[in-house]
Amino acid sequence: DQQDQLYRSNQVDRLDQEDQVDPSYRQSHCYREDQGGPDLPGTPGRPDFPGGPLAPVPFGPRGPSGPLGPIFPGGPLDPGVPGSPS
Image 1 (tube, helix red, strand yellow):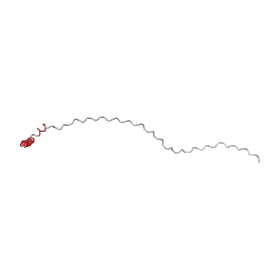
Image 2 (cartoon, rainbow, N blue to C red; image 1 turned 180 degrees about the vertical axis):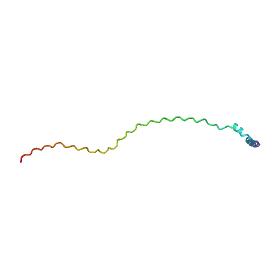
Image 3 (cartoon, rainbow, N blue to C red; image 1 turned 30 degrees about the vertical axis):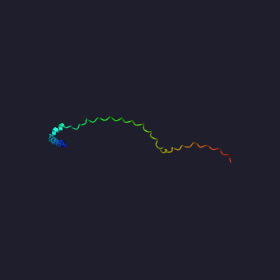
Image 4 (cartoon, rainbow, N blue to C red; image 1 turned 120 degrees about the vertical axis):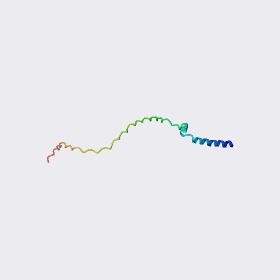
């Protein structure tokens, strides 16, 4: 129990001594957090897939009919059958 007490007081003394250490000494002798190396470059992405062929465009609705053409002149009149004398 006495030894335990001694050990504890020793610890306290040691802590006090550490506080008196020059901060610059402490900085140079303490482990500094390791700074990681540079980031590794990422792997290049996969190339874009080429698009498929375009779908054929469906035909649009049928347009309106054009105007009627000119009227053809009729042919010569057929001479009738000569009538019988009355």
